[in-house]
Amino acid sequence: MKMVLFILSLSDVCCPFLIVTTSSSLSHWEAEFTRWAPSIDVVVYSGSRDSRRRIKSLEFYDEGGFMMLQVLLSTLEAVIEVMLQFEKVFCHTTLVLR
Image (cartoon, rainbow, N blue to C red; front, top):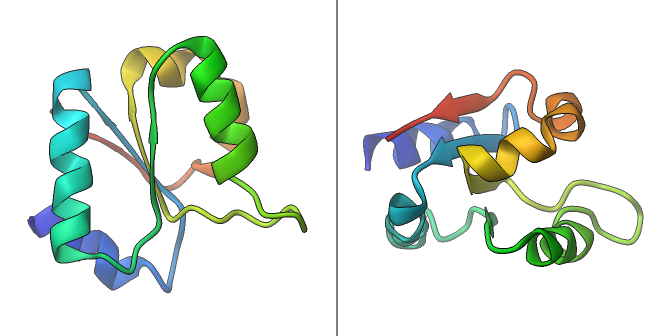
């Protein structure tokens, strides 16, 4: 809860946030954001490689190319595959949590 409220307090200052956690914790994090910060746009980046590609194309950017999401929840395995792409977007706001 504290981390969710911390991110909520910074959401107007710096975004997006990348939270890297275990696959078993993704739903917990998503529920915490829904409960404590429902105004924050959270995207869970998980599933097969094709599912993640679809998530990225539909939920990352709007039609004008602007970042829509404020928090991306993912696993280390999924992030490692696209680290170079994410490095440009999440360079200063990466949190690694268990």
